[in-house]
Figure: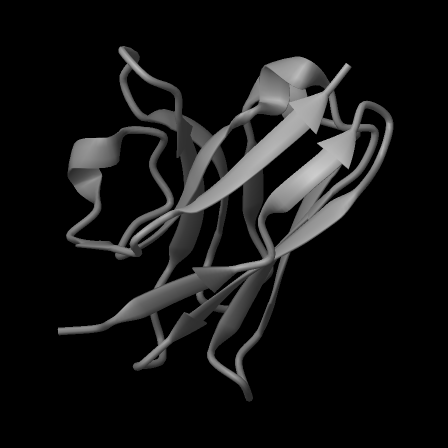
Length: 118
């Protein structure tokens, strides 16, 4: 069992930046970020292997978002630049896979709200 705690969400203007953090209670997990808006399914954003060598991004965030991790701190980050209003969502940290499907992940954080104003 691993617990995940996200932080770093907030309100930002379009074109701005935010950095999300996800602190894990354990180590050695592949990690990912998903996002969800009301009435829609949880959407894959990015994933990173436990070593940090392999990363993956959904097409809509490529070139704008960067996932990274600090294994000494058991923390994963999502640097979000050039934010757009359509990036507005609750962002969730997940552990246990690098796949782009939510059901592949056993562990989830509580989510952090990101709101991008136009």
